[in-house]
Amino acid sequence: MPSKESDYLRALYKDWSGRMAANPAMPLADLRSLFDEWGKPAFEPEDVAYKTGKVGGVDAIWAFPAGCDKSKVLIYTHGGGFAVGSAGSHRKLAGPVAKALGVSSVVLNYRLAPENPFPAQLEDAVAVYKALLASGIKARDIGTIGDSAGGNLAVASVLKFRELGLELPGCVIAFSPWLDMELTGGTLERNGGADALVSSAILAAMRGMFIGDDIAKARDPLANPLHADFKGYPPLYINAGGAETLLDDARRLYARATAAGVKATLSVVDGMQHVFPCLAGRASEADEDIRKIAAWYRAL
Image (cartoon, rainbow, N blue to C red; front, side, top):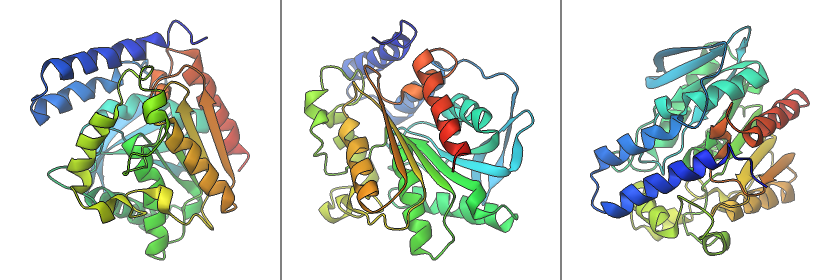
């Protein structure tokens, strides 16, 4: 059974869903303000310092846990359907993960759709990765990490690095990744009554802002990594909630990666909502999975 503390996230998502349903023509600026509440579930992590700056020309927030190894970096790409969310909304998730792993993290304010459609977000991730490499940080000491749409970017950015002939990072971590731009996952329907936030209608609207109506783009491996070749891909940790509509995206990514020989781990926690690690510090389920990620990272 989910912990009582984990219900905070369900209640927050229900509140968002209710506010969006009450105002279906909500302006994008208001929608972005709504989703900036994504930082509310996590408790403020202890002993983590934050610094705002630019990396590779991209606005970002650095998370520096006390005593962390600054030569090791996680590039965090936030969720929000490629159109909402921010580094500010996700720093309290990036911070605890970095702390558990003993590394630093840089949370990107990548360009958002629809003003900046695909592939602008990948271009920003590439710029940051190149800047970190140019600063002397080794590729093996960099990881990509993200949630929801940001989980897509964490996965797809590495495919783009490979396409560009760059040395690949040491690992990839994806929380509740939204990967399938064709919206074919069976849990979109089966978990529709359990997921308090994500529906096919919401995903279709976000997809329209991200890639428009071009069917070919919905199958582009850099937009939809379920069509990608994962041969030679770095170790991959995938996390999802058992109650979420995007669960099948996580399962299919795991199946595709392992079939290509990738060292992949899939963690599905029963009863949990979309991106449940954002309950870091509040709910035991989030803290336990972050501990599992840290153990996995140390064993790489």
